[in-house]
Image (cartoon, rainbow, N blue to C red; front, side, top):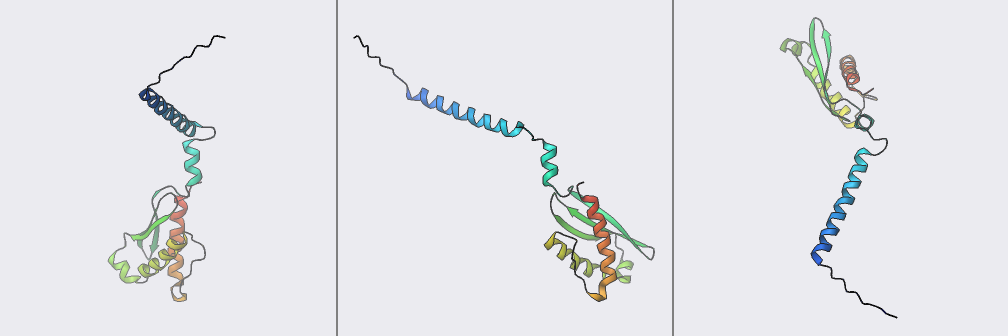
Length: 145
């Protein structure tokens, strides 16, 4: 029986380089799989997750020849702000409850992120209904189909 002993010399530097390149190859393969994997498109994933199209949406209110807008700002899944724009001083004087009622409605909408089951005082019913209709109209413009 002849057995020849073979001695293999491995340099530690070569082993480390090989391990690092193998790890980078595995990480690259995982990233490519998740980016281009089956059933994943940018349009599908963005549309599934978002409730609204981000932006600023307005709805007009006209009272006795005075027109002003309710502006609703949304991001992909939340109503961020609701405010009155183009509200003249004469309209503020004529309808002094507009801003306090809007603040009350907006705080409820921010906390629930819903336009359902909004509470308002009985003496502010009509003002609340007018503002809520305008807010609903603006939010419908923002909703994804």
